[in-house]
Amino acid sequence: FSNKYPTNQVLKFNLMDTCGDPDYIGLTGIELFGADGNLVQLTEDSVTGPSLNDLEHCSGDYRTPDKLMTGCNITTDDIQMWLAPFTSGESHVLTVTLPQSTEITAIKIYNYNKTSEDTYRGVKTLKMTLDDKPLCGGQTVHLRRAPGTTHYDFGQIIDLSEKPEWNELDTIVHLSKGDPINIRKLIPDYEISLLPAGFVYQIYIYSSFGDPYYVGLNGIELFDEEGEEIELAAGQVSAVPDSVNVLYQDQQIMKGGDVRTPDKLINHVINDDSARNSWLAPILPNTGNRVYIVFDYPVTVAMIKLYNYSKAPARGVKEFGVLVDDLVVYHGLLSPHNGSHEPEIVLFSDRIAPNSNSLLTKSCGVEQQVELTNNKTKMGNDRNSPSVYDSNIRPFTSLVNH
Image (cartoon, rainbow, N blue to C red):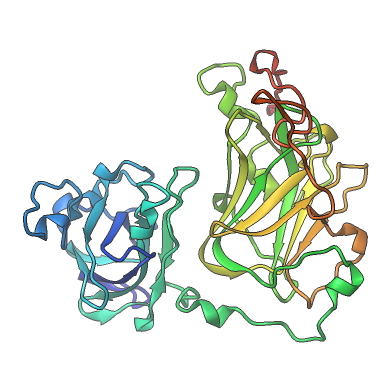
């Protein structure tokens, strides 16, 4: 083997802190990847560590370390998870014993994911050793909290071939050079949250421009504090509902599926009014539309560019929010597509000025939404139902590859 990657037998995870729970710590799964990029096959007895069964008067709890190797990782079923007592300041170690000397190039960790409340039992920070030699330069690795849902693949990859950027959140939050711009003076109504940093960026869509059945976007672009675009891979982007395809999963209506999938949001083909390079999803009752962009280490975003759905402007996004690690950092309004393909901008920096103030999204503080009810029945102006919703008359839509 080359010396680029570690090649030994005993891998230890020293779990240092939880995501907030003072009494319990847990994970959903661990995967190791070899030199060829393939999954290293491990048995369930290859991992050892503490469990709830170590507590006095507790036995038979199924959340034991062997569950970390079952391969059932994208789940909210805690029968597939590991959970142990936690005491701040004490040692909590998981040990993975490899059957032979193995070259490890990456580790993928799935944090504890039973419910949104229980995700605070997940691991926040850890250190790793291989045959007692520190990995990642002995630095602390920060894990992101699991979503408490299966909306996306929440496994976090720790690439052992790269310098870890996730060791300390504070080290990546810095302002670019240049004189600050007085955004409030330029645009008095604009509310700015300076330089959010986190693992998971979410676009939460509250309403379309009138279509009660579908909502979509042409594209999304993220920029760092230097004004440089952040490169994204298709696997980092997902949506709930995923796309129009969720309506026809059990039917053979569209062979090959509708092409308007979340990966199109980042392919940089913005000016295609045929929608073949856009994303479109159904609006479903009691289900908010979300787009997720997920990173394996905390990323600072200074600007987001959004391109609204152009094929049918009524299906474009109207009211939306931006969340970073489940915290709301912006709430605003887009405009419907008007024939041009200029982006609308959410700005998080006082060091970057857009080309035109008119491209900035409008804060929801400027335009209030009112929901009216009559005897507990929603009337007009409901932002989540711009028109009367009737699933029985949902229009069929299909865009497939020729």
